[in-house]
Length: 238
Image 1 (cartoon, rainbow, N blue to C red):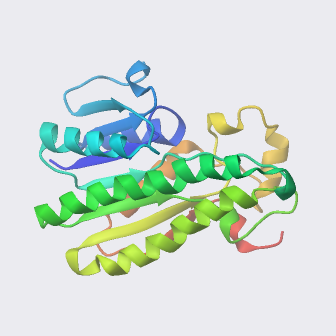
Image 2: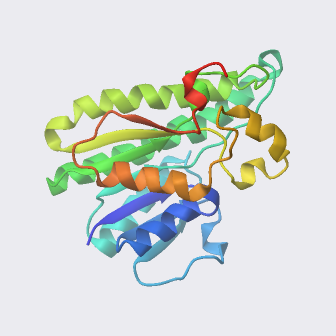
């Protein structure tokens, strides 16, 4: 039985990933700051929940240890944890950037290092998927997200570099790039406005993102891919 680690697992896309991977028979180790308080999960034997800040290196180490001690392997990692907020560029502070970087980039580095080290020990390959954003390469006028996109664009870049670096070890590294997703992040944004942010004028259900992540995780011949699940938002002007 295979084991997947999911960061940012307490709500939204992360919670959907936990439930879907469990339903497919995987062992799951989920983490977020206070995930032990989450009530929506069936605490069956194939689920471990670990509290912690992904930006703290200790969290990644503890989560990796839990996975190996409880289930014997790390076969996949989904770097789902991320933060996002918009401001005009001149209003962003260096503290804003450090906060974004700690979660979006440093968290990715900490967890991915531990996962790859364990996958190399196992000699059976593995999968790593990051959640990025279609705004990295296709900004939208009026959506001022310059600093968050430094971090998300960095994830797109490292995805391709790591895919090549570890291809011979059968460790695949991919990213999924959403547009607007129906998560708590957008709970206060009017849906009529959100629908204008893609040419299909729709909002993506969480399960569509989850299904894309599962596809990348289980597709043995895909690596270095940035898969857009964004209702066409990456296509350009509309």
